[in-house]
Length: 158
Image 1 (cartoon, rainbow, N blue to C red):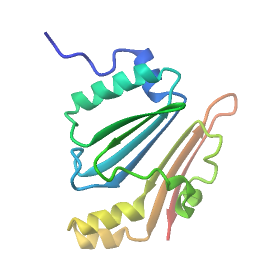
Image 2: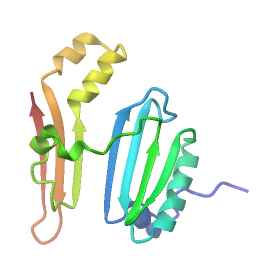
Image 3: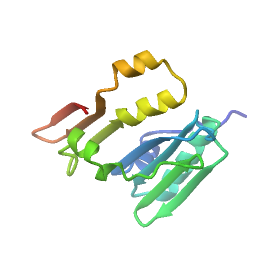
């Protein structure tokens, strides 16, 4: 008997992505997910199905260990790793500079490049390469759909 596919169709995808999904990554050397603490927060009209799909995805990725799935009033919060990620990124000045139009957007992505470079330095990555990119602060992407669709990509520096 073959294993069940993690996502079986559009209904599974809609349930797990919901109306809003946020993913936060943090450094967690003890995490089963390649040294990353990961928190996924999704608002879903079908949290039961979303939880089932998320658990299948975690199983398919062979991620177990420190995994927490919490039900919230309007969705789910999934954390991988002991440290997870705080999810407080949206209130930081760096986030607001990179994604000033985050409120009301259909899609928002933010990468804290300063933090990523600091983690790379702590892990002993190529110091010369890290120095070359050290002025970078963040990368923000936002998009909206509808009759007047738009997208913005912004790279910020310190």
